[in-house]
Structures are given as C-alpha cells and as structure tokens.
Amino acid sequence: MEKIIKAAVDRGASDLHIKAGDVFRARIDGKLVPLTKQRLTPEQTKAIALRLMPSEEDRTRIDKVRDYDCSWGMPGIGRFRVSILRQRSSFMIVMRVIPFDVPSFESLKLPAVLSQVASAERGMILVTGVTGSGKSSTMAAIINHINQTQHKHILTLENPIEFLHRDISCSVTQREIGVDTDDFRMGLRAALRQDPDVVLIGEMRDSETIDTAMKAAETGHVLISTLHTPDAVTTVSRIVSMFPPEEQEICRLRLSEALQAVVSQRLLPRADGKGRAAALEILIATGTARDMIKDPNRTPELHDYIKESREQYGMQTFDQHLMDLVSEGIVTYETAMAASSNPADFELQMRTLRRRSRVASTTEAAPVKAEPEPDRPAGFTDDLSSMLPPS
Image 1: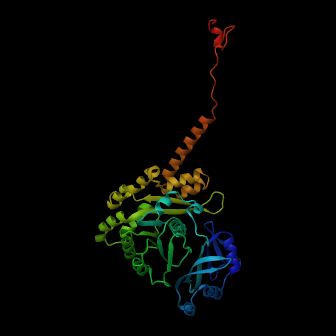
Image 2: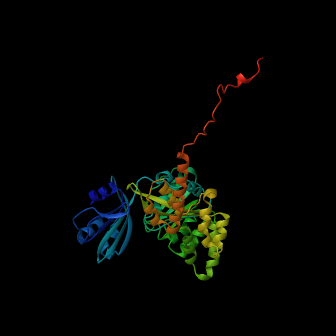
Image 3: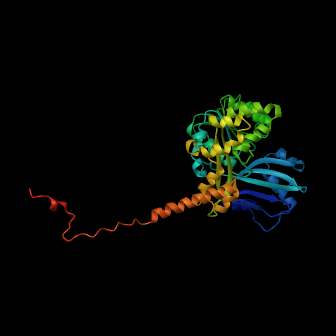
C-alpha cells in the first residue's frame, strides 16, 4: 500500500481512491487515473481502513463505521486527509494529499492583492469554490503570510488538521474537531475566550456557525473560513439565505459590516500539461461594495463593480483573470472558455483583445517610409557655412 501511495504522490496526485471491487485510482492533474491492475477485495480495503485509523477505540468499532474522517501520515510518503465511508456495504477510502511544505502566495502564484487582504486587522475573509479547488492551500498561504509578517495569536479549528504551521512570528494553536474539541460551533464559541487575533474555521456549515463567525469579526478578530460557492456574488446570497426570512435583513447589514474579502477560485489544467493553475475572483469590501451587500436589489451589481475596480483596488472577476492566463500561455483558450462565468462575453472580450494585439504588432512592425528627397541643383550643399559672408 505504501509503495502505491508513494508512487501516486511522486506523480503529483491530489487524491487517492481505494475501493473494494476496484483498482487503486489517483487524481492527477484533475483526472482520475488507475494505478494498479489488480482489484481490491473487501477484506483488503477493510485492512487498509484499519491501518489508517489513528485510534484503537475507533478500530474496535470499525464494523459500525459509516462515515469517518481522520488524518494520516508516514515519513517519506506524506500527510493525508482521510475519509472512510461505506458503499454497497463495503469500505471505500478517499485520501487527500497534504503537502509537507506550507504554501506561500508566491509558490501558488496568487495575485499580490492577497497580501493586502491578509494584513487586515479585523473582518471575515472567505475562500470559496467547489470541492478540490484549492481552498485549503489558499487559506494556508494566508495564515503563513500572517505568521511571517505579524505578531498575533492564530487559532485554527479543522477537521482534520491539514497543514502544520510552526510558530514563526505568531503563536499558532491548531485544534482538531473530534479530538481537541467536539464540533465547529463549540470550538468557535470557546475560541473567542482564548485571546485569538486570527481564527480559522475549516468550513461554515450552518447559520449558527456563520452567526458566531460574524460576531468574531464584529468584535475585532480576523475570521478566515470557506464556503462551497462558485463566485463572490453567490457567496453573499448563500450566507443570507441560510438565515430565516425574518432575520435576513439584519444578516445583510451585519455581513456588509463584517466582510473583508471574498476569494473564489477554480483550478484549471495548465497548457503545458504540468499540473493545474488557479483562476481567482476577488472581491474587496470597500464602502461601495458594502452598500451593494446591504441592498438586495443592488447585490447583483457586485459583479460589474468588481470588474470596474481592478486598477483601483486590485479586484478581479474570473473572466478577467482567465484572459490573463490565456494571454500568458498558462492555460489554453478552450480551457478558459469552458471555465468562464459568461462564455459569450468572454469570447467577445478575447476577440477584442486579439484584434488590438494584431493592430499593435502591425503598427510596430511596419517600416517607416522615408520621404523622397527633392532634386537638388548642381553645387547645392548642406554646409550652411558656405552661404555666410566672409568675415
């Protein structure tokens, strides 16, 4: 098992799938590919599950396990977020690879404006996207930046703990749900009594957790968390919709005051076939953006506001970043087109950009025609001194 897992990690796998009745599979550059030819038996899969479970108490009740999350690591192979589940009455295991090295903004090639976002003194920073879009890595990079540049107490609530942060300039407290605290809600409530400056919650799953998270932001903390939403505008609507109708107006007001930034992301295969690149949409909560969040009739205007605020505030829409990635040759036009929020508008903008590029290159390449010199009479000279009277 260790050899197969190591081979997958060496090939750049992000996830491993181990299922009774199937071969080992790994997600490499976004595609699920087989690693072995021999199919696993239910007994082999159960034995692997037992090997990955860290607690002897949990191992004794494995036959009662339906859904189980933990982390697992081995020297020379790596660390993994492990999900053990039942399907067709037998076990399946999904392992997410967690790199040993904590990522930075530079290593992930994230926009420079995120350094400004990470320097906030208070407010909610939400990292959103579908499962497997790199949210955990971006949050780890934000924590890493704070850890290296500020002097604060960072407290994380994770299920399970993924990236291991050393104490650099900050003191970092990492708590695992089910091991160090019962659940996100209890852990977050307790966190506010533990003198944190920055609180990271692995995921905001319900209105009660969101309510406590907003309270943390309102009382002067930086609150970092994730949501499974595709873009910035949907993130605002999703948070509001999680509250009862009679509370939604006050929720909008609180969210508009508490929100600091929304970073939505998607991972795309690179044009050179070597890994994936992140496309990001970034909303910074300026005064105008807060007014749009407060007013449900103006919230849909956020997308155009993000687009227009790129130069002034460093915000960007997905389509703007996708155009950059295509122009730099990082992703193909076809890949970007499929991932764009508005394919028709994206195609039109790319055509306009290409037309401008062709006009600019033609103008630069065209040789400057020299004006023909007029016929000169005999004895004509350019030396004006010969035309001066003798001294």
